[in-house]
Structures are given as C-alpha cells and as structure tokens.
Length: 374
Image 1 (spheres, rainbow, N blue to C red):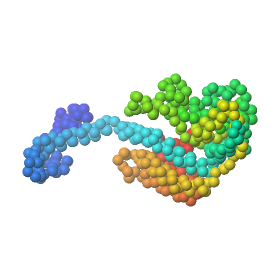
Image 2 (cartoon, rainbow, N blue to C red; image 1 turned 90 degrees about the horizontal axis):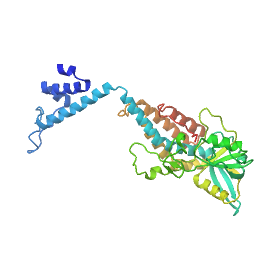
Image 3 (cartoon, rainbow, N blue to C red; image 1 turned 135 degrees about the vertical axis):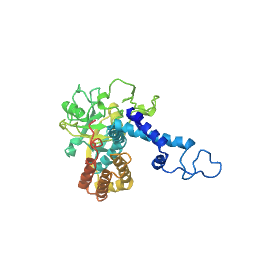
Image 4 (tube, helix red, strand yellow; image 1 turned 45 degrees about the horizontal axis):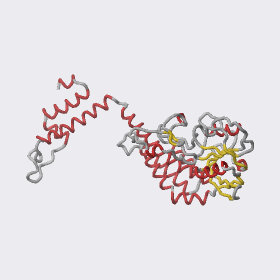
C-alpha cells in the first residue's frame, strides 16, 4: 500500500485495486458482487461455486475489470475538463448533422406564409411558368419590385465583383456562392438593378473564407474532407444544392438597398439558359402562397419528421452523456409540444415565438440562426 502512495495517480489507482483483492478477498466480493456459480458439470474448473471467492480465470477477469474502472477514474481526475470537452464535441457534431435539416423544415413552414410565386414569361416560345421564390429577410413586401425584364449578372465572379456594364432597371439573376448574399445584392444595385433573383447554384460544403479558392475543384465545389472520410473522394466531392433559404446580411452588416428572393437550382438554370440563348425572360407578376391550405399538407407530411429531428437534437444538450433525466431535456420537450400545438392551430405568431423559445433554451454551443448569410 505504501508503494501505491508513491506511484503516479493512474498507476496508484490500479495498485490499490490489486492490493484490495490480494489482502481482503471478502472486500472484492463486496465490490464486484457475488461470483456466478458453476452451472452444469463440465462448465470449467476455473468457475467459483456459489458463495465462494473467485479464483483462477474468473479472478483475473475481475481484476482486469477493476483495473480498467480505476484507470478511468484516475484519468478523469487528472483531466477535469475532459468531460466538458466531450460534451462540447457532441453538441457541435450534432449541430452539423441536425440543424440543417431542422432549418429546412422551419424555413419551409415560414415560407407557407411568406413565400411568393413569380409568374415568368419566356418570349421565344411565349410560354409562361410559375416559380416559387423565398424572399430575403429584408424584403419589404412590395411585390411590384420583382416585376420586369430579367438580366444576368455581368461580372465573372458569381456577382461578387463590380459589374463592368450597367443593368439599369433590370431584375438581375445571380447564382449563390463565393460571397455573402448582401454583397451580391449591393453589387447589382450599384450597377442599377431594380431587384435581384438569386438561384441556388450547386456549391461545396466549405466555409465562406475558402469558397472559390484554389483546391481540388469539382465544378463549382471544392474538395472537403473530415477525419474518417475516404480518400478516394466520391460523392463527398460533388457540389450540391444547399437548399432555398431565407437570406440575411451578416451580423453587423446593413440590409441591402433593394429587394431579393431565392429560387431553386432547376428554375434558375432554366432562366439562365434561356437568357444565354438570346431569349427574353420577364417576370410578369407576383402571387402569394395560401398559408392555411399549405400548412395542412405540412402537418400531414413533414411536421412529425421535423419534431423527431428536434427531439434528437434536444437530447444532445444534456450535461452528462448518460443522464437522460437532465432537466433541460424536459424543458426542450415542453417547448416542442408548444410548437406542435401552434402549428396545428395555424397560429403563425405562436409558431414563431414557440420555435424561438425552443432555440433559446439550447446550449450556447447548440444555438443557431434561422437565416443564412451566404
């Protein structure tokens, strides 16, 4: 025992367990519980009879278990911040996985009231189509600002640089990527644009600071790997649509001076191809969604999925990885119940406030913005 006191903490804990088993066999039984008895004949000479002390292979197994437990205790004692580090890692990883899904569901729900339709005419064949569009966070509600002839951005960097030619009075079509939404809109406005339609161009998972920089490029995307990703590339290198979103300026940046909406990759591509082929494209009119009718469909098809993603993400906010009775789990469950009640009641004000409340009760590491800036 004296030697244990002089040993390093980790070795000391293991040494104490060994001393406990060697000096006081009855203590080992109390610590590990009674040994299993030998069953039918031939079960093995090393197994202890019921009520007897462990010996042979069984004793070695118990000793190994004790050493592992003691080693774990000693390791946590030497690194008290390790548990919090693991918790932070758990929340951050869950945020990457679940928040994009929850955001898409919630923005679709918000869009049932705020989204608009663009009635677009293709002059070449006289066809007219209706495209769903999501207004930016700074959209002022004057739909007539989105009417008019459509032009492509005239710079060569995704609409991020000053335009070499004017687009006075035009609704300018700009792809997503390479720079923040607000910057794209400001560049179009400086060139005389009336308003902006952004289309959800395929882009990589990379953060804004490396968008468009030198790298292993696949189309508009950039290779991105995390620990454990296969080095062969594959679908991870393939750029993808990030999803139509509610656009907002970055924190601390003023709202752009003209309105903007976002449309899907497919619809944007149709308009781009037509304009590049020399055809005239015009937004003739703007229509509004019917909130009440569309929310019924959301309740039938998507509400349950959204609540499930919210529940999974909520459980990752607990303090201890094994403590599912953590009070925060109950708090977040009550928030989700209020949110579900508001959705089914079609109470838009309560939908926004209850969802905001759920988000506010998340761990600071787990909180996230409802809008996106690029």
